[in-house]
Length: 80
Length: 510
Image (tube, rainbow over all chains, first blue to last red; front, side, top):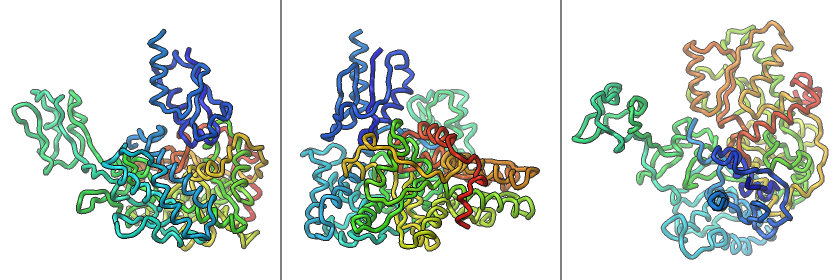
């Protein structure tokens, strides 16, 4: 299971973090491959306009986009 | 319902829109708004700040990209678009935006001509999936004989085609595609016209300001005007400003943000008091319940239509003038909430914060403008918070005055209004036979009215909402519709009062 945390502080929400959370949660292909949860302010990394912030298997991802997240997930799945 | 791909997916269109809001708020917050000359210089810098790259990403050149951002920036200050007038500077008329006076007019929604990519208008087309089959059901079902066959494929004669779509449904190879301008497909009142060069233009006479074209356009070519700049100036001038917050606010700013943190954040940007519009919803419910009894039970009206969604009401009055008297004459929840505030504090300014673009337009009408001074969206509120560097999750949770019932708090979800009115009617008259129907999105609402008028639909209490899912799907939302729908329901359960008639505070507004 790939562990994903999505920052759901209000800065990151404006930048679409909850949209990504909802999208990934409803992606049937990933149901048994990721565990995903929302969290508040991952160590305040968003401060320098880095939002939205995500954490994938404990690695911080700044300026996260669905595109980047899908690539990272796919690479991890390929490595398995 | 229309194609929903642009809802719930964070795209570059949304990114640019929100960056413009944040920069626009920063412009006012970090400069002295009396210093117009300085602001003009700062204003001119913003498009370059938002589009910093040397090479274009989306359009033919960065200059065009920046010019479009300039137009968006003007709209965010409430200024009219320049619409290609190149002989005037981007900051033209800036001084008119720099006061607490409302400057937006009813024509809230506009196309930025330079941003419109002239998408072709609606058509059905045959693709190379076509096998030119022996059965050719496409031409069998065509009512206007528009389909013929060349050596390989079926061909649709666009001159004859009436876009009924029967051929597409009939084709066993899925070979016929439906194409439409996303803006026109999203519009429930056919208000998207074309100009001489085939760009989309909004027919302001027909437009009901729901804002669905704004969120549907994949080029971000349609903007609504904002008035948060005037609001921020009112707060700088130490005017007493009340925020009334629409019931769909729950969950908008993130699943972990508590309602009390949102209240605190709103106060931190300069509001004195915060009140839930769900209170005004209870007032509206009480009126509509009585109206139903008078008009439908005792009177000769066959049905009553709810009144809280201005786009739905405008569509109904415009397309079905014969049912004008069937639409409730109650105040909208927004107006009822503001009336309560202004009754106790006549000097106060009131700002509606919600998911809705139509409310911006409603607030310019003579019967509402006395009560409502500003309307901003959740998206704009969140942008102001970011511009002020306020993170809601860092804030302490403030208490929310318990002024609303569960029924009032359920208003923003499709069906919530009719259910609230139903509870009230049954309280006043337990024998009353209330048959409810409700629809969301204007095309569906239109269908419902037609069904009721021809007697196919026996409903006598009908609720219409212009946005998908209800207000929770408005153009100014931050959070996916499903999530807000759930969050609103959970929050409503915690209310002190169950039905609108049980809310004792509503007696203060008559």
